[in-house]
Amino acid sequence: MSDYVIDKSGCWVWAGSCRAGGSPIVYREGRMVSARRAILQETKGFRIDRRTKVMRGASCHPKCVNPEHCYLKRNHEVNEAFLENYGAHRRRRVRETTVQKIERLEKDRKKWSI
Image 1 (cartoon, rainbow, N blue to C red):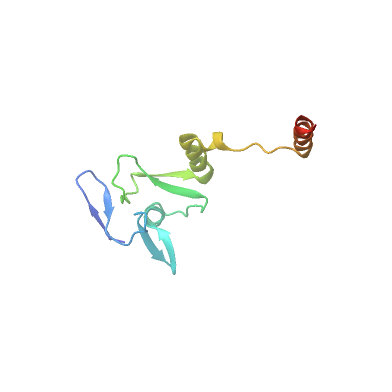
Image 2: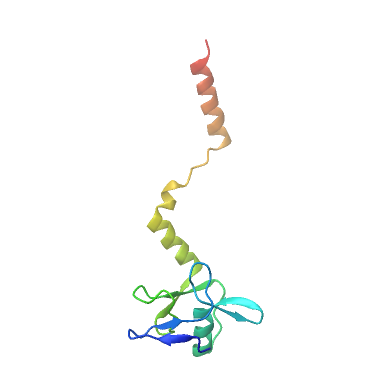
């Protein structure tokens, strides 16, 4: 797995295949796998759970695959960070219970009846 070039900042810039979004990929056993995950598994010698994302550092090159610059994050941590950053948790609609809906309809009916 030598499809990378080492730049002056220490990042291993991936020179192989990439997804449409630009994240580096490699094919293993007929499946498309993240190059960061594959290199990290190869260098550290352990298997990474599929519910864990391999993230790159904020100051790294977008195609950096250096295992020293990568860190692991569980999927639920990534989702919580997304919700906080983009305010999605505030946009969630509260569902009315059936009783509340009936009360609201009765109130509207009384308001508009003659």
